[in-house]
Image (cartoon, rainbow, N blue to C red; front, side, top):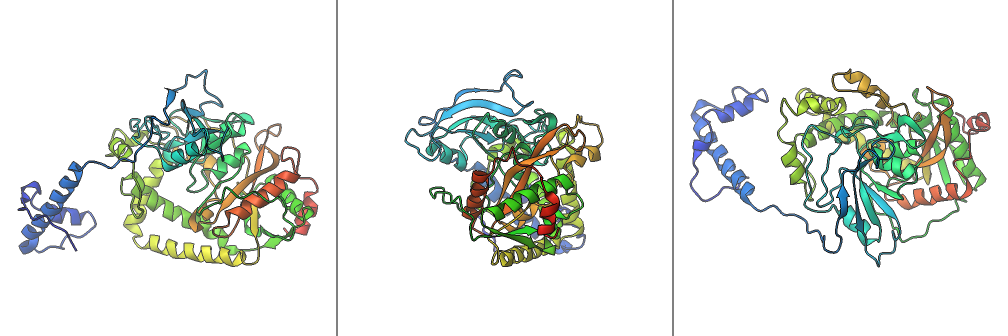
Length: 490
């Protein structure tokens, strides 16, 4: 059903043959008989009038109380102020609610895709000009009300489209444990600053592993996913009586480094010492997760990059859309290959596989249901967060090989992306170190991913807290790994 204005329709705003031209773009060349062309032109003119009317409406901007929470000392940091290469996007200070309790005394940094009123955003790119949000994101309001102090925004990767940390147009971010190595992405700057002890908390976003990957590489922890977490509940340090599954498919993928496997198995074995039942479980469908995520992300990601995001109620960043549109022969070439690849892949999939997205949604539901059956028997399942430790950063420039630019990220999300598809809460916990494959003298953090049933964030927090209460992750290793492999039949 269409809604039309009562006012007369002037079809002069629509060129003759426009309806036919639009249909030809989807391969339909005989969809409108010539006798109906003028009528569809008039119908196009009607929706054109509606669109023009909506453009004239005043945009709704969520109110931001900058009187209560003024932005102080806002500036783009000089190179001498930067840390871990180029971790900061902008530095500033917003003091939180003096009566806030949960985050009182904590410093917080925000990924540079989270809106802070009055603070310019780069989004890791120079393909489009920086834009300045008019309102704070909800999470900004909440951390301020909880009493924290926001100290800046941090570099994210190019359009948040990489798990490397050299793709941002604002500069490379280095691992806090080894300069020249990846901090992971796309929440690269925040993870480096938290992993290096500069900031207490980083707020990021995770659509395939963009928090868990850099957190694993930098020795950080926790990604709250879908659902609500009761942050007022005290964490439990006992796992006695709990059942924990060691997911076979999460370890046996060909990309999983043997040392990473050993470190995570050793960490899993320690749950037995804490009173939990720990045993191997198998879910072969887990291996299909990356393929399902890839199709969904390429299509949905392309729609977002083209300004066509839809399906959710909420406030949209019209400032970003104004800066982004339209893609041109000047702006598109400046994108990093991962972002170009998303758009090219997405356009191809929508053209050549128009029904495939629907099938991925069905298989995603199958994955979700299959995991839920596992969680009827187990409180937690675990696996390596990433298959290998942080690789070296590349010195990549526009004009260099696109596939070379993408290679360091390939395979990193084999265990993380699937839970963005299913919606299960997943946390990465640092559990030791492993040597870099390119330099055995460089030791880098290893993350263990803990996954719980839907709406069960509290369980992963309790289990993670129990493990770190009993162990110093910087001192544990992969000792007796052969014994652990036998114990779990790996």
